Amino acid sequence: MSETPKAPRWTLWLPLALFLGFVALVVFGLVRPKNNDIASQMIGKPLPAFALRAASDDRPGLASTDLAKGKPRLLNIFASWCIPCRAEAPVLEELRRQGAQIDAIAIRDHKEDLAAFLQRYGNPYASIGADDVSAVQLAIGSSGVPETFVIDGKGIIRYQHIGDITPDQVPEMLAKLKEAGQ
Amino acid sequence: MKRLGIVLALALAVPAMADDSMPPAPWAYRQLPDAAQEAKAKALMETLRCLVCQSQSIADSDASIAGDMRSQVRERIARGEDPEAIRAWLIQRYGDYVSYEPRVTALTWPLFAAPVVLLVVAAFLLRKRFAGGAKA
Image (tube, rainbow over all chains, first blue to last red; front, side, top):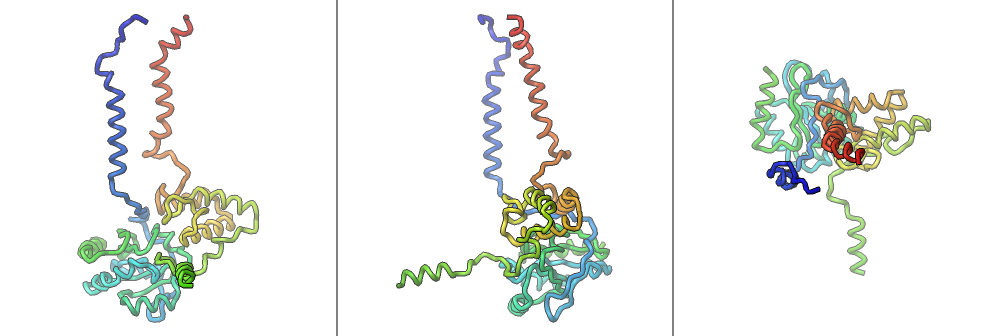
Protein backbone atom coordinates (compact mmCIF):
# COMPACT_ATOMS: atom_id res chain seq x y z
CA MET A 1 0.00 0.00 0.00
CA SER A 2 3.04 2.33 -0.18
CA GLU A 3 2.32 3.04 -3.86
CA THR A 4 1.42 6.64 -4.62
CA PRO A 5 -2.04 7.03 -6.17
CA LYS A 6 -1.92 7.37 -9.93
CA ALA A 7 -5.09 9.47 -10.33
CA PRO A 8 -4.45 13.08 -11.35
CA ARG A 9 -4.79 15.70 -8.62
CA TRP A 10 -7.92 17.34 -10.00
CA THR A 11 -9.94 14.18 -9.36
CA LEU A 12 -9.69 15.06 -5.69
CA TRP A 13 -12.24 17.80 -6.33
CA LEU A 14 -14.63 15.59 -8.25
CA PRO A 15 -16.79 14.53 -5.29
CA LEU A 16 -17.12 18.15 -4.13
CA ALA A 17 -18.07 19.25 -7.65
CA LEU A 18 -20.68 16.49 -7.85
CA PHE A 19 -22.05 17.50 -4.46
CA LEU A 20 -22.27 21.17 -5.45
CA GLY A 21 -24.02 20.18 -8.66
CA PHE A 22 -26.53 18.22 -6.60
CA VAL A 23 -27.10 21.19 -4.27
CA ALA A 24 -27.64 23.47 -7.28
CA LEU A 25 -30.21 21.02 -8.64
CA VAL A 26 -32.10 20.91 -5.33
CA VAL A 27 -32.08 24.72 -4.98
CA PHE A 28 -33.31 25.07 -8.57
CA GLY A 29 -36.15 22.63 -7.84
CA LEU A 30 -37.12 24.51 -4.69
CA VAL A 31 -36.98 27.99 -6.19
CA ARG A 32 -38.70 27.20 -9.46
CA PRO A 33 -42.36 28.26 -9.32
CA LYS A 34 -44.69 25.31 -8.99
CA ASN A 35 -46.95 24.55 -11.90
CA ASN A 36 -49.76 22.08 -11.37
CA ASP A 37 -51.42 22.59 -14.73
CA ILE A 38 -52.08 19.42 -16.63
CA ALA A 39 -52.09 20.28 -20.32
CA SER A 40 -54.56 18.42 -22.48
CA GLN A 41 -52.89 16.12 -24.98
CA MET A 42 -55.89 16.53 -27.29
CA ILE A 43 -54.61 19.71 -28.97
CA GLY A 44 -54.59 19.15 -32.71
CA LYS A 45 -57.02 16.26 -32.41
CA PRO A 46 -60.70 16.25 -33.28
CA LEU A 47 -63.20 16.88 -30.52
CA PRO A 48 -64.59 13.55 -29.26
CA ALA A 49 -68.22 12.99 -30.21
CA PHE A 50 -70.73 14.06 -27.58
CA ALA A 51 -74.25 15.42 -27.23
CA LEU A 52 -75.14 17.15 -24.00
CA ARG A 53 -78.63 18.21 -22.94
CA ALA A 54 -79.33 21.89 -22.30
CA ALA A 55 -78.06 22.98 -18.90
CA SER A 56 -80.27 26.06 -18.81
CA ASP A 57 -83.78 26.90 -20.01
CA ASP A 58 -82.84 29.74 -22.30
CA ARG A 59 -79.90 28.24 -24.16
CA PRO A 60 -79.73 25.09 -26.27
CA GLY A 61 -77.59 22.11 -25.30
CA LEU A 62 -74.31 21.35 -26.99
CA ALA A 63 -73.17 18.60 -29.33
CA SER A 64 -69.69 18.10 -30.79
CA THR A 65 -71.20 18.59 -34.28
CA ASP A 66 -72.22 22.16 -33.30
CA LEU A 67 -68.55 23.00 -33.01
CA ALA A 68 -67.67 21.92 -36.54
CA LYS A 69 -69.75 24.37 -38.52
CA GLY A 70 -67.04 26.34 -40.26
CA LYS A 71 -66.43 29.12 -37.77
CA PRO A 72 -63.93 28.77 -34.90
CA ARG A 73 -65.44 29.00 -31.43
CA LEU A 74 -64.45 29.12 -27.82
CA LEU A 75 -65.51 26.24 -25.64
CA ASN A 76 -65.64 27.31 -22.01
CA ILE A 77 -65.67 24.66 -19.29
CA PHE A 78 -67.23 26.21 -16.21
CA ALA A 79 -69.60 25.71 -13.29
CA SER A 80 -71.76 27.89 -11.07
CA TRP A 81 -69.91 26.52 -8.00
CA CYS A 82 -66.55 27.56 -9.39
CA ILE A 83 -65.27 30.77 -7.77
CA PRO A 84 -62.76 31.88 -10.48
CA CYS A 85 -65.57 31.47 -13.04
CA ARG A 86 -67.25 34.50 -11.46
CA ALA A 87 -64.18 36.61 -12.14
CA GLU A 88 -64.02 35.24 -15.65
CA ALA A 89 -67.66 35.99 -16.56
CA PRO A 90 -67.16 39.70 -17.46
CA VAL A 91 -64.04 38.79 -19.47
CA LEU A 92 -66.03 36.25 -21.49
CA GLU A 93 -68.68 38.94 -22.03
CA GLU A 94 -65.96 41.22 -23.38
CA LEU A 95 -64.75 38.43 -25.70
CA ARG A 96 -68.30 37.96 -26.95
CA ARG A 97 -68.63 41.72 -27.51
CA GLN A 98 -65.50 41.60 -29.63
CA GLY A 99 -66.97 38.92 -31.84
CA ALA A 100 -66.04 35.60 -30.22
CA GLN A 101 -68.65 32.85 -30.26
CA ILE A 102 -68.62 31.11 -26.94
CA ASP A 103 -70.22 27.79 -26.15
CA ALA A 104 -70.04 26.23 -22.75
CA ILE A 105 -70.10 22.99 -20.84
CA ALA A 106 -71.36 23.27 -17.28
CA ILE A 107 -69.73 20.68 -15.05
CA ARG A 108 -71.83 18.96 -12.37
CA ASP A 109 -74.30 21.78 -12.10
CA HIS A 110 -77.87 22.11 -10.83
CA LYS A 111 -80.21 23.95 -13.17
CA GLU A 112 -81.32 26.43 -10.48
CA ASP A 113 -77.74 27.19 -9.37
CA LEU A 114 -76.69 27.74 -12.96
CA ALA A 115 -79.68 30.01 -13.67
CA ALA A 116 -78.80 32.11 -10.61
CA PHE A 117 -75.15 32.27 -11.70
CA LEU A 118 -76.02 33.41 -15.22
CA GLN A 119 -78.52 35.92 -13.85
CA ARG A 120 -75.93 37.41 -11.56
CA TYR A 121 -72.73 37.24 -13.59
CA GLY A 122 -74.06 37.40 -17.15
CA ASN A 123 -74.59 34.91 -19.92
CA PRO A 124 -72.17 35.28 -22.85
CA TYR A 125 -72.88 31.76 -24.11
CA ALA A 126 -74.51 30.67 -27.37
CA SER A 127 -75.23 27.24 -25.92
CA ILE A 128 -74.62 25.42 -22.65
CA GLY A 129 -74.39 21.66 -22.39
CA ALA A 130 -74.72 19.90 -19.05
CA ASP A 131 -71.96 17.45 -18.14
CA ASP A 132 -73.19 15.82 -14.94
CA VAL A 133 -70.48 13.17 -14.56
CA SER A 134 -67.55 15.07 -16.13
CA ALA A 135 -67.64 12.64 -19.06
CA VAL A 136 -66.94 15.19 -21.80
CA GLN A 137 -64.48 16.97 -19.56
CA LEU A 138 -62.46 13.76 -19.24
CA ALA A 139 -62.82 13.00 -22.95
CA ILE A 140 -61.22 16.32 -23.95
CA GLY A 141 -58.45 16.15 -21.35
CA SER A 142 -59.67 19.00 -19.18
CA SER A 143 -58.86 18.69 -15.50
CA GLY A 144 -60.67 21.58 -13.86
CA VAL A 145 -62.82 24.67 -14.11
CA PRO A 146 -62.57 27.11 -15.69
CA GLU A 147 -60.79 26.07 -18.84
CA THR A 148 -61.30 27.41 -22.35
CA PHE A 149 -60.61 25.56 -25.57
CA VAL A 150 -60.35 27.02 -29.06
CA ILE A 151 -62.15 24.76 -31.53
CA ASP A 152 -61.61 25.48 -35.21
CA GLY A 153 -64.38 25.34 -37.80
CA LYS A 154 -63.70 21.65 -38.51
CA GLY A 155 -64.09 20.55 -34.91
CA ILE A 156 -60.36 20.24 -34.20
CA ILE A 157 -59.15 21.34 -30.75
CA ARG A 158 -56.54 24.03 -31.39
CA TYR A 159 -55.71 25.56 -28.03
CA GLN A 160 -56.34 25.14 -24.32
CA HIS A 161 -56.35 27.92 -21.76
CA ILE A 162 -56.16 26.63 -18.18
CA GLY A 163 -57.70 28.78 -15.44
CA ASP A 164 -59.75 31.92 -15.78
CA ILE A 165 -59.03 34.28 -18.66
CA THR A 166 -57.88 37.59 -17.22
CA PRO A 167 -58.74 40.92 -18.95
CA ASP A 168 -55.21 41.30 -20.29
CA GLN A 169 -55.45 37.90 -21.99
CA VAL A 170 -58.42 38.94 -24.17
CA PRO A 171 -56.27 39.97 -27.19
CA GLU A 172 -54.34 36.69 -26.94
CA MET A 173 -57.55 34.62 -26.93
CA LEU A 174 -58.91 36.59 -29.90
CA ALA A 175 -55.61 35.99 -31.72
CA LYS A 176 -55.82 32.25 -31.02
CA LEU A 177 -59.37 32.27 -32.33
CA LYS A 178 -58.33 34.12 -35.50
CA GLU A 179 -55.39 31.76 -35.97
CA ALA A 180 -57.75 28.78 -35.76
CA GLY A 181 -59.90 30.34 -38.51
CA GLN A 182 -57.08 30.51 -41.00
CA MET B 1 -73.56 29.14 26.03
CA LYS B 2 -71.84 31.66 23.80
CA ARG B 3 -68.95 29.30 23.35
CA LEU B 4 -71.33 26.50 22.40
CA GLY B 5 -72.85 28.85 19.84
CA ILE B 6 -69.46 29.53 18.30
CA VAL B 7 -68.62 25.83 18.20
CA LEU B 8 -71.96 25.08 16.56
CA ALA B 9 -71.49 27.88 14.04
CA LEU B 10 -68.05 26.53 13.17
CA ALA B 11 -69.32 23.00 12.87
CA LEU B 12 -72.20 23.99 10.62
CA ALA B 13 -70.33 26.56 8.53
CA VAL B 14 -70.23 25.83 4.85
CA PRO B 15 -66.61 25.69 3.71
CA ALA B 16 -65.69 28.45 1.28
CA MET B 17 -63.99 25.90 -0.94
CA ALA B 18 -65.56 25.55 -4.33
CA ASP B 19 -67.09 22.20 -4.97
CA ASP B 20 -70.32 21.05 -6.46
CA SER B 21 -73.33 19.64 -4.66
CA MET B 22 -74.37 17.15 -7.32
CA PRO B 23 -74.84 13.53 -6.30
CA PRO B 24 -71.81 11.36 -7.12
CA ALA B 25 -71.65 9.52 -10.43
CA PRO B 26 -73.42 6.14 -10.36
CA TRP B 27 -70.31 3.97 -9.82
CA ALA B 28 -68.16 6.44 -7.89
CA TYR B 29 -68.80 4.86 -4.50
CA ARG B 30 -70.44 1.58 -5.49
CA GLN B 31 -68.60 -1.64 -6.19
CA LEU B 32 -69.30 -3.69 -9.26
CA PRO B 33 -71.45 -6.75 -8.50
CA ASP B 34 -68.90 -9.04 -10.16
CA ALA B 35 -66.00 -9.46 -7.69
CA ALA B 36 -63.44 -10.23 -10.38
CA GLN B 37 -64.37 -7.12 -12.34
CA GLU B 38 -64.31 -5.01 -9.19
CA ALA B 39 -60.82 -6.31 -8.37
CA LYS B 40 -59.64 -5.32 -11.85
CA ALA B 41 -61.22 -1.88 -11.53
CA LYS B 42 -59.73 -1.38 -8.05
CA ALA B 43 -56.25 -2.32 -9.24
CA LEU B 44 -56.51 0.16 -12.10
CA MET B 45 -57.96 2.94 -9.94
CA GLU B 46 -55.08 2.65 -7.51
CA THR B 47 -52.62 3.44 -10.29
CA LEU B 48 -54.49 6.39 -11.79
CA ARG B 49 -53.69 9.83 -10.53
CA CYS B 50 -56.34 12.23 -9.34
CA LEU B 51 -56.22 15.37 -11.50
CA VAL B 52 -57.05 17.94 -8.84
CA CYS B 53 -55.41 16.33 -5.79
CA GLN B 54 -52.25 15.31 -7.52
CA SER B 55 -50.65 13.21 -4.82
CA GLN B 56 -53.55 10.82 -4.52
CA SER B 57 -54.84 8.03 -6.68
CA ILE B 58 -58.44 8.25 -7.81
CA ALA B 59 -59.14 5.31 -5.47
CA ASP B 60 -58.04 7.46 -2.52
CA SER B 61 -59.59 10.77 -3.46
CA ASP B 62 -62.97 12.19 -2.58
CA ALA B 63 -62.81 14.94 -5.23
CA SER B 64 -65.83 14.78 -7.49
CA ILE B 65 -63.74 14.49 -10.66
CA ALA B 66 -62.01 11.46 -9.09
CA GLY B 67 -65.47 10.00 -8.39
CA ASP B 68 -66.42 10.60 -12.00
CA MET B 69 -63.22 8.88 -13.13
CA ARG B 70 -63.90 5.88 -10.86
CA SER B 71 -67.40 5.63 -12.20
CA GLN B 72 -66.13 5.68 -15.74
CA VAL B 73 -63.44 3.06 -14.97
CA ARG B 74 -66.05 0.72 -13.43
CA GLU B 75 -68.52 1.23 -16.28
CA ARG B 76 -65.85 0.45 -18.85
CA ILE B 77 -64.59 -2.61 -16.99
CA ALA B 78 -68.19 -3.83 -16.66
CA ARG B 79 -68.49 -3.45 -20.44
CA GLY B 80 -65.49 -5.75 -20.78
CA GLU B 81 -62.87 -3.16 -21.63
CA ASP B 82 -59.26 -4.03 -20.84
CA PRO B 83 -57.81 -2.01 -17.91
CA GLU B 84 -54.71 -1.14 -19.92
CA ALA B 85 -56.91 0.18 -22.73
CA ILE B 86 -58.63 2.49 -20.23
CA ARG B 87 -55.25 3.65 -18.96
CA ALA B 88 -54.13 4.29 -22.55
CA TRP B 89 -57.33 6.27 -23.18
CA LEU B 90 -56.57 8.52 -20.22
CA ILE B 91 -52.87 8.89 -21.10
CA GLN B 92 -53.98 9.96 -24.58
CA ARG B 93 -55.87 12.81 -22.90
CA TYR B 94 -53.72 13.79 -19.93
CA GLY B 95 -50.30 12.42 -20.78
CA ASP B 96 -48.22 10.10 -18.59
CA TYR B 97 -49.08 12.35 -15.68
CA VAL B 98 -52.37 10.58 -15.07
CA SER B 99 -50.76 7.16 -14.58
CA TYR B 100 -48.70 5.99 -11.64
CA GLU B 101 -47.42 3.05 -13.67
CA PRO B 102 -44.12 4.17 -15.21
CA ARG B 103 -43.64 3.52 -18.90
CA VAL B 104 -40.43 3.26 -20.86
CA THR B 105 -40.53 6.19 -23.28
CA ALA B 106 -38.02 8.38 -25.12
CA LEU B 107 -37.99 10.57 -22.00
CA THR B 108 -37.91 7.95 -19.24
CA TRP B 109 -35.58 5.25 -20.61
CA PRO B 110 -32.49 6.71 -18.84
CA LEU B 111 -34.19 6.00 -15.50
CA PHE B 112 -34.39 2.33 -16.41
CA ALA B 113 -30.98 2.23 -18.06
CA ALA B 114 -29.08 4.10 -15.33
CA PRO B 115 -28.84 1.21 -12.79
CA VAL B 116 -27.52 -1.15 -15.48
CA VAL B 117 -25.02 1.44 -16.70
CA LEU B 118 -23.85 2.13 -13.13
CA LEU B 119 -23.38 -1.60 -12.48
CA VAL B 120 -21.34 -1.98 -15.65
CA VAL B 121 -19.22 1.08 -14.81
CA ALA B 122 -18.67 -0.16 -11.24
CA ALA B 123 -17.62 -3.60 -12.47
CA PHE B 124 -15.19 -1.96 -14.89
CA LEU B 125 -13.68 0.29 -12.21
CA LEU B 126 -13.36 -2.51 -9.69
CA ARG B 127 -12.11 -5.20 -12.07
CA LYS B 128 -8.50 -4.87 -10.86
CA ARG B 129 -9.50 -5.13 -7.24
CA PHE B 130 -11.48 -8.30 -7.91
CA ALA B 131 -8.60 -9.76 -9.89
CA GLY B 132 -6.17 -8.76 -7.10
CA GLY B 133 -8.44 -10.35 -4.51
CA ALA B 134 -8.45 -13.61 -6.41
CA LYS B 135 -4.67 -13.70 -6.51
CA ALA B 136 -4.16 -12.92 -2.87
